[in-house]
Image (tube, rainbow, N blue to C red; front, side, top):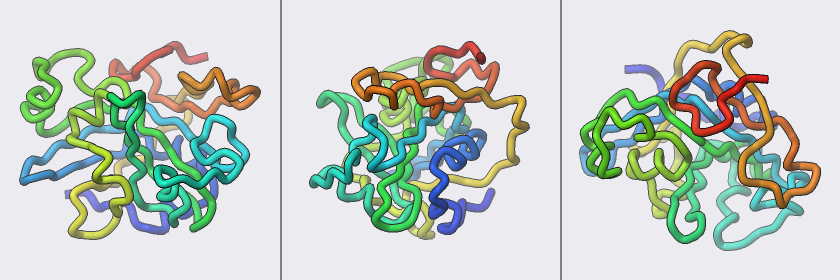
Length: 205
């Protein structure tokens, strides 16, 4: 079994660096004895108070965003439009609300479980494509927001994997943040070149 990423990994203040480096790592859940795992192929960085696209822009603190102000190494899971759960990784030191949204996975383990949760065939091309889809496939729910990604007993974690070559990684603007002014054009969405599991805008520019 691969080693879980250590706490120190998440506490860097370089959120874009972490978002890029998370590509290729393995997101794992074990809920009620059901193990699912997928390779991270797409992620977006959100830089706390200076980023109008972030829930914590201008240090906004609410019941929902309070977990973003925790020290890095916990999950931030929220409900989008009252329908889709979204899985984020909180990064940086305590009080600095940076996070990385996991946008897509390549499914690796527990495909039958994922298919049941998504009501899709296990070979469906969109089984874990998109943040809402992957959260459902992996059993992620807002009740797990704030969960440690590093404690041994945690049902949610990320495992180490070999680093990708710079040539295999693409960057571009984030998706669905047109409201964010100039921040909407920041190239903080990272994805693996040629992966069939990337959620949208797969062309690498």
